[in-house]
Image (cartoon, rainbow, N blue to C red; front, side, top):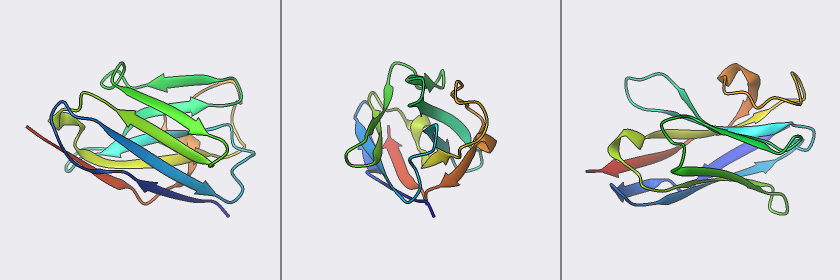
Length: 128
């Protein structure tokens, strides 16, 4: 089975940076990629970033493009989200997710339904 564990969240001032990590274990090698999602209090879960390591493609939400970078360390089996120039609107619980071996290997989906396995989340709080 697959297990995803996020870490790296915390409290940071506006303009600061954080790097989130997602350690993966289990049968992750057949997946087409992974993604980051976030959910703020009173708001719906939203897409943040995704990586497809089959076709080597990344996608970002417009709200984070240019500020966030998604990457993967194969040796450590870990997904990262480097977050720079943080603002209070980035405050949310951040979740990493793993795609199953389904759908198209040539797409990098932004829909949560395309991701099968989820971590427990890590809280990011950005103060003004």
